Image (cartoon, rainbow, N blue to C red):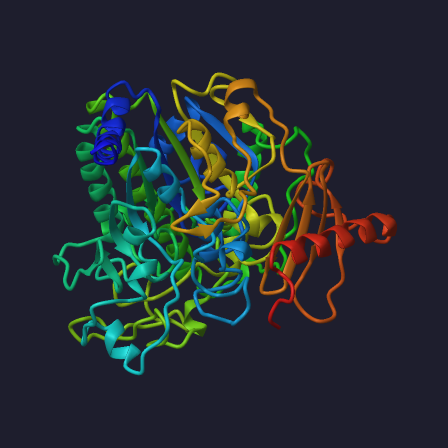
Length: 555
């Protein structure tokens, strides 16, 4: 009888304790907003001309980071952000295909936990809206017709790797990485496919509306909540609503060089970098706007990119309104960032009907990948991207773009907003070094819980990230001694003291060396001047790569 009483008491405590704790729960809500392929300087508060008053408002009452890093591409960044370890340790060193190496399995492993899994155990309500892109997505023989919604299947990946089976109580969004914004493929609600959408559907707006719905529901409960809002915008295809596009139809007609210069001047005024006059890098492959025979198309492509960001900002305004209406604004930590730099991709070079790239709409209209820029970007039937010239402008003042390990590929704008928690440098800018893997550690810290060592009977890789909370409270922290990077054999190693080595992909590539303290935009390669420093850091990179499952990387 005594054993039965003990078991019964444990059962009662298991059910009641979280509720008792939650009644007096002062821990903050946490919202992580991740946008897709947005440039470093696209936001107004980072020097851009895109109208982002709501995001800028978060920055004005919060804190901007100037040296915050991602993993260079969508799925690796998401893997690292969600798990608090390097993307290779989480199993996604490249894309969501299994390459039969521990660091390149193409899906989150069972030796890591997501933020949602960790916070769910700590009594948080957990919800996700948006793009997942961290589950293996093998192709089908009828992929083309599947993409066009001509056939339906119950799953888009193994459901054990869906968000609702990785710690999220709720999820509405995509499993794959690329979306038709007006009729998306791989859309799910929980573990169920959403087979059709309304005729006036636009995915960014649907995500914002759904996030507001989650906030309204979660705010009525006693427990704090964690919401991961992962927009697909402004990732290609360039799809936007006409009322948003019209705001920017004349903004970019001056061309990419003029836009870069204007952004650079605003960044100097904003103090994003040290007040030097020579930190604007040269374009990697300069092209004269005034010799461009497709100016109308090119200006419109960037206008659509801006419109997509504008619609995100409108959604952030909705979130802010919902938080205030529910009395949750002051004690909600909001982190806003991009998964990588703007993309230089040209969609017209892809193979329509392959992977996640449809060639037909649901009603049978052809989707054009405008190799000759024969149709303007914006509508559903055009799959286009901004290309390298605008990507370089979007990433002002840096060199290069998405998937490269130069600053233009891996440095993200990052805004932290938490009225009750950020006590130092409010409305200012910090040069403290950070990485997306720090978001897990930050969540663990503010949730006042522990990072699991065992989860569902599996030993969990120790967390690599470090909490940002000391920066919020004191303005500084003991940060990472170094941060390593690798993606498709693009490599970098960034030390806390400002030294960085970079090696471009390719068998003949050699290490380059930059001092980011004096050369933030990597214009002066010092490898020949300091060969011993290169050798020292290259050895450290190799040690990091071995430890973090980067080696051996597939060629």
